[in-house]
Length: 94
Figure 1 (cartoon, rainbow, N blue to C red):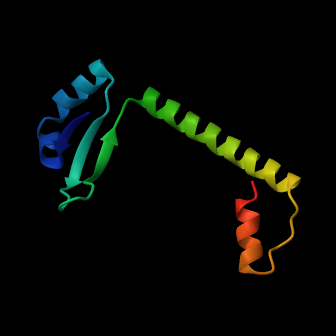
Figure 2 (cartoon, rainbow, N blue to C red; figure 1 turned 135 degrees about the horizontal axis):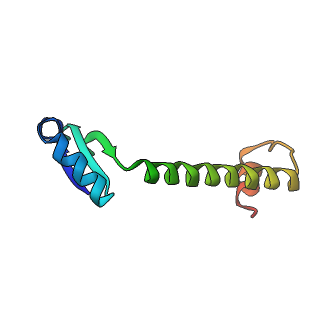
């Protein structure tokens, strides 16, 4: 993924967008340079089709997780643990 500072993005915006359109590869635009050992602040610019695929997959995964949690909850005893030992046993049971 190509990375640009905000200044360079504004300076070369037309060329960057043409390249993005041709290559369909996302680019990163850094707005705040990170200090040591932390992530830069910024944005990722990607083609609309790729964004739509990403949100579709996220929605499907969220739906699957909710379904799994619901199924698990319906098949297990809904009682609340009385103490920490019972809670620990309950959490490690499966």
